[in-house]
Length: 208
Image (tube, rainbow, N blue to C red; front, side, top):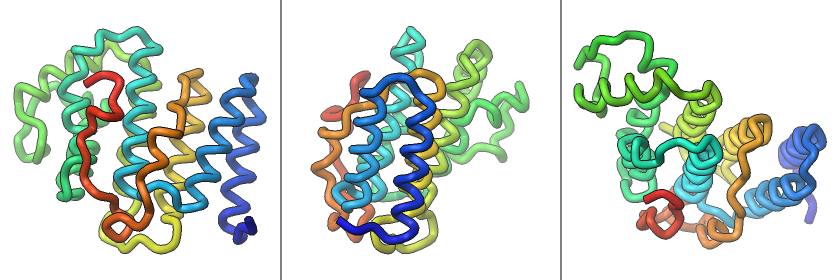
């Protein structure tokens, strides 16, 4: 299959990132994932976002965190796959980013559209003890979800693909295992003009 210049650049970038790692399995799975993205196998928004959330779940599992402590975060993240209100979903992922939430230890309702006061203080206490990599992964997921905000999806959705490659790189840099791509290949770029149809996240989540 012939790739255009943008696609070739993304493939080369991914291979370059992978060459910095020592685990050959990661090389093959990541290249396979990106190539499938190029071929428009996955739905741009919901399919790629689901893959990103599974990355986050793998990070939590690798760090041996108490998974039940992350129910609030998981609820808001997986909402992306069951809702068609992507603006609300993107607002939620922005409010979940630890770096921003920890800027103040006081809840100002004018600063939050989704998180309640109780959720804010719960997450504030949870985030005080987390690894910095969690902040990076959640930030990458937010940008992945908002990569096509207020725009139309054209072609294979380059914006979300670039964001996905960035998230994959973060996972590899922190030695977090990547999800296998096969469960996500059923999400077609043809669904709902590339945004993807809603689905029950429990079929993909390792935590819920």
